[in-house]
Length: 338
Length: 175
Image 1 (tube, each protein chain N blue to C red):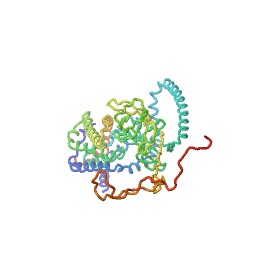
Image 2: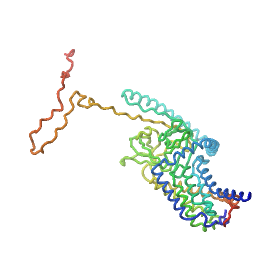
Image 3: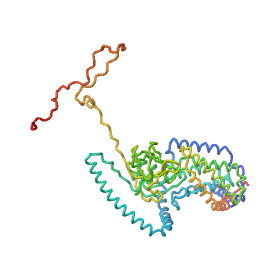
Image 4: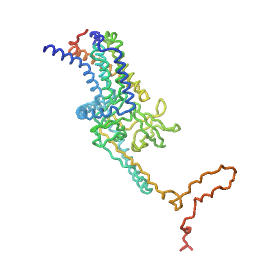
């Protein structure tokens, strides 16, 4: 192990110039990567597509080993855990019944109010075939890609809540940027109160909450859901709960556990952009009301001298003009009530 | 003649061993499957051959190899390009300047020498990422990766020593 046992080849392949040149090249790459963030993406996607079968093969025994190692400590708490789960299950059944009743009521109200229905979401189920926990990047690799209709920006959720969003797609694989990642910033809503905020990951387990309004005071335990602002993510996706940050501000404890998720859903949310109707002269407010269009303003020929000058040009026609066909004024019905 | 060809082939092979081991280290470390369920960041396995041969055989582990291994690390981690390349070059610069001192260390001192070089790489990468995103990454994750790298270097240097003696060492010529 002693390094001193090895002799050194001197003055071969060293020198400061190559280091300086290569460092300049590396800095240039960083700057180019900053300007064009998709510099490596195609290569990464190709490498992941190529390595996907190997990942699936290698992952299977490791997942088994991981579960086995994780379950060693759980053996001693099985009885207590079973009681806790039974209690939780009973409470969840009650909540489920309440949710069904409320859901039906909301649907009935929407029908009565002729409210715009919520956009339909379609999803693709995918399996996690890889996880990368780097100091500067936290990602996940899924076994579904472009061929399954996955697109960058789509939300990734598991049974508990949102995990992250797709940032790179290959043909058969896709990369997910986790909500905890340093690069993750998504618009969220905090309920109750409907406070708007940006949830920013900082590579810790609980992302930071950057409130858009400084006057808002949140209560720990408030629910955080996606706001849907920007039209990229569907609104109302469950994300987590608010906790106070010891260093000031708030953080979000995520509902989903990306470390243990095996099967996830990639949500395809496409908010149809509403096209404005093409305007015609008849659509102008005056003409639609049966009135002629307003005359253009008369050109000013002389400066105004007096406070109440006499009009130099004929007065413009009044905007409101009786319609060509006089309608009888509306009157209450006279029959039958006398 | 045949003997000369063998010697030439052997030299080419031995000159490729450090770089190939570095590439292998980058691939293994960044393989997106973790036995520990991603609890800790993977060690910088690519940095171990880089440090080892940059110290004892800089003719085989040139700055170009440091750049290539860094770019590969960037590519496989999914991070912005050039970050680890610059970080590895910064560490290489340190090794290049302090080669005599680092090579003379043994035992715990050798590990400490590697730790200084690895810390240089990790801190440089953190600073670049902080400037890149205009937001400093958490120091804890970087320190854990640094600790893992140093921990893995202890058995790693034994393995690298064996590889050096068996595959690279016999073909050293200019000592």
